[in-house]
Image (tube, rainbow, N blue to C red):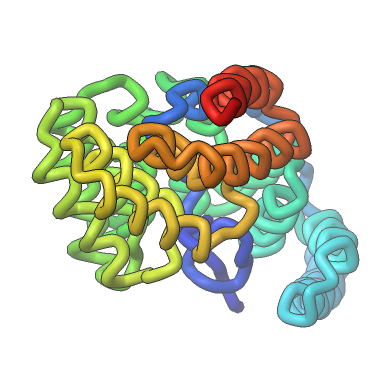
Length: 319
C-alpha cells in the first residue's frame, strides 16, 4: 500500500507534501490571507459487508487503489480520483483509498471534498497519523484554526516524528502570530524532514514578524541552499536588503527571484523600487509595466493599481 504525505512540493502528489500554500512574502502583505473554507463535517460510518462479499470487494478495492496510484504517477489526476472513489466505495474501511483520494482532490483545488476524504481516512484507521495531519492541514488552509490544531496535535500524538505535521502546526502558530512556538515547530519539522526548504522559509517569516531581519535573512538563505530556485526566499532577502539601503544587493536578489519564477510579480515590483531609488527611471518603467501586467493576469487588482501608481511616477520623472 503506497501512501503519500501532503504537501512539501506544493504541486506533487506521490512525494512528501505539506498542506497549505506557502504564504507569499511579507511585501505585499495582502498576499498572506487564506481562502475561506467550510470545515469538513463528520460522515457516518458505512455498514460492513457480509463476510464473503467483503473479501471479494476488498480484493477489488485494492485493485482500484493500485490503479489510482498508477494514474497519479502518470499524471492522470482525474482518473486517479475516479479509481480512489471506486476503491473507497467498495471497501469503506480501506483508509489508503480515502487518504489518497484526499490528496488527489486537494491537488485539483477541491478543499472541502479533500477534507471529507481525510476525515473518512481517520475513521477507517484511527491510528493513521498522516490522515489526521492532512485533515488538520486542510482545515488550516480553510482558516479553521481551532479544529486544525486539534487534528494536528492528534497526528503528533500518534507519530511524534511526522515532520510535515510539525510543519503544519508551525504554519498554524505563525498564522496566530505565535512566533516563538511556530519557530519551535518548524525546527522540529527540519529535524525530521531535513531536505525541505519550507520550514526554513517560514522561520524567516517569523523572524520578520519579530523585526529580526538578520536572523530572517539567514533563514531565507538556508532555504535557498536547499532550493536555489525559491522565488519567495530570494524576494524576502531583497526586501531586507532594500530596507537596509543596500540597493545593488537588493536588485541582485530580486533578479534571482525573477529568474526562479518569471511569473512572480513581486520580484519585478521590488526591482522597480530599487530603480526608482537609483533614479534609473527607464529601467523602473520597464519592470513595473511587467509587474502590473502580471498582477492583472493573476487577478491581484489591488497590487496592479499600486504598481500603476508607481509606474506613473516613474514615467513623469522621465519627462
